[in-house]
Image (cartoon, rainbow, N blue to C red; front, side):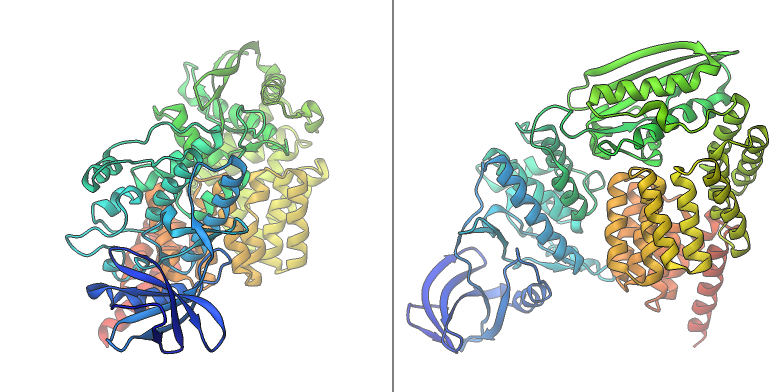
Length: 639
């Protein structure tokens, strides 16, 4: 549509051209009714059908760093146009000062998170679509390729068959190959933007589009010269496989908010403790090597200034030959502790090494040949040495309220080992070992707390008084036991429905050990019964960042999303969890089916409910869901 300065388009007077591209053109205009400057965008020819879609996408978003839509209309020639917020600014260009780049990146991630939260993919994220205002604030614009993420319609996330839309240098590999897309495609594009912000050059340069697309699909960008934190974030965003990237923009934003721009490990200490290898002749001693590593992890988790990845995620790498750098990238940490344990008679030999993940160098290593009775001293010495290497304060023995006798300690380790198997047989063996530990050392607090956790795992209401009793006894023996407070929080919220008491116990758990997985896992328990779904989602996402390979926080996220009625996102997150972790967690399948069932899609719910029952035929929720789904589907089929 030919336009000239001074032309009228309804109440809008054309002032000047702003730009044009392959899909359309944008004009500066004056709204004669409200006396304000606006931007009017047209799409050319065959693309005009996208206007209604783009209008819906932008209108659904309300974020200070997203361009706002004011109006929509149709020209006399029948072409649609959008009336947008006019933004005085320049396209984002790198390299930028590191601190400013980090600030802007965090704000852009927040804008993208808002879009994804509304189920909207941008699909054309690039520096040219991010304007910097005079106040150096970013504005995300041009949702001309935006798509709604609708899991019921696979075509919603595909490009047009045989075509590729977007800008080659910023496409994800799956977009470049015209494959189905989800939010992780935008995360790849955001990684390209980050790369350019920090170094001033494109991650995937090329003189021709086909050359660029080939690099996007097959090549890695040149190494980025930046701090280890920034390198780790950008590299993970740019993984070719979507499953290896951050799985939600919220995770990227959280990583950016805590990133350190300085070099070296001391400024932003973080660690993952891998399971120690069992070098004993008796392979049944794995419980002991696992227990030693977990005890060290728990000691380190008491250090407020140190980020410690929880056991579930750290131990997920057992027996896997993977590069230390890739493990650190997956868990978003800067250092890795690995080691081995050899037990022979009454003696143990422990080796441990702290590794700088950025270059594989050893920051510290040591071996200990000791009497078995010295195992607690070994744990303290290793934790203290790590704290020294990372320059964080470790209180050492002051954190240990009671040193148990060795048989009780071994029984605790065996019980904890069985509990981690999450099976009926494991639960029963767990109880026996924990009761033995208590009998061998009645003043030992942790077996009581673990017994409370065991009762919580069984869930039926008649068990809850036993969980409360065990936790209370643990706190009599050790008032700093975060696990015992966590058990009491769970009992207060799911049995007593006493929200004030649940909040109190949650805070006591956090005070006892801010980094403790016990304390972190309480968020959904606190917020869900009160209907505080947004808060629950935020807490679950934070917990996922701390324990990315653990099913429990992902199940908490699914429960919060279902409670909030965000069923389509719950379905997407369930599929993502199965892809990232495995399909062996019944709770993920349960909420996958739940999200379908609450939309009345009982046929779709049947398969995930059946899978949940296959994995946990002993759990009342899995049994009930399977029964209800089958009845509803049968009733619908008969109508």
